[in-house]
View (cartoon, rainbow over the protein chains, first blue to last red):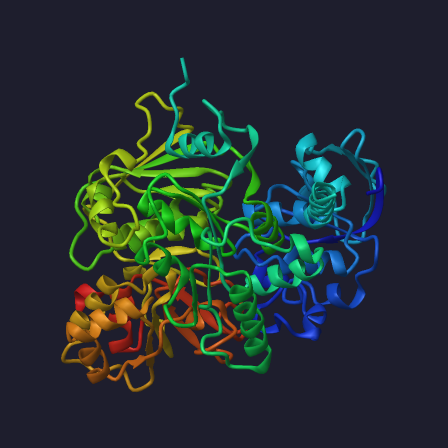
Length: 173
Length: 424
């Protein structure tokens, strides 16, 4: 995980649910990526680029436990999300997959679509490079930061299982 | 002295092996049960990437797997996913694998006695909060967390704050627990319980059947809740009687301490409550049914983990008896489980529903998640007893979904417009 993120903003409103992010009818289809968030912004699936970020209002990711939501954003190149608040399961899934979900009070008022932002994991400050305005994000607890820095839950689990395997083998010898 | 704790705090403290816990604290807790449905396919795929010798679930008796989405399989893709899960379940020697044969997960787990008071349960379905009606801490997770839970039997948790809804009074005829939770969603909005544990208390909550309470706990997820408990009382013990391996007694019930920290208390007298309807496209866009005039509907749906239980079918049959579904409307009814289906046949409910020209489908999630049966065409409206009305949730993005109680759905199916069952 980079200590500093610089990226172009895609902007969304409040209560962006998991069906809007990954519509049910495209789940499991290779075409899913062409429909991510399309009802909210038809440009998004067409023009999103690696290194872009999402800014949104409150309750981002509400709805289903569908992990396809943060997963699709990650696959499309999104490197972080900056929202007023998140729905619980989405937040867990995003941490688990290694996509940093930042909580930034006031973010939906200060940043617009197409703005460039810079964010530091040292200070948790988010800067709008167009306006120069700086916002303070909530610090992600170390406990969860470790999961993000470890590349997500699956990678960490794999390490643990490999360790377990080593122990099993050592016992045999 | 140990600090006074809420139900959620007590269960998390026990599962984490701690004397006490506080809201905001992060901890690692042992889980008592993992439920996985279609998302198990993604857990299986992740397991494939692990070294073969350690590719095992933490306890084959504590991982319950079943199929309820896409049942029976409508596509080769779904059939393949189900095949993958099936083969994995047998290979892992899972003691409880219900395949496509039982019904919707949140009804099957309590029915088959897997849910006990005081348990910490995670499920790969957001509506796992339903188990709060049985005094268990149930919460939804994604499939990465599901994989960790399956392999290690433990997960990280943040201890939630607890809020209370005091439900006083007595519900009028044809006004149901669904109307209460929709009223709460409308008044306090969809993030009122974000990251919080809910405790429903008060006379109206105590008077409710387990099925009605399950609707409250289930729909609480739509308000952002992590857990949602209804009163811990004898009704739970009665429901679970003969279902659990070891009998449940009153000693098993987890009750909050008197001086437990409650972040906020909301009060609602339900005595004069009118049926409520959540209008497109958010669950908190709620209006009393009387304000919806001439909203035509083409589809009506009673089922899902929210409202597919016997009392829901019963009230629908009572309202539909002697009537026919409107000629411009179709009514889909899906019992939540085979047990409920069988009971509904025995009680003559299914016959009444069929006589009214309702369509009965096999127990499964049905149109609720928008990828299987009963999808909506553009410009169609559906009145649904399920839990989500997001844009495109049941098919076309240009369709409108209205959420309501089974009583309102049944009445609306008769008239073809959204209707208060008390006016029929």
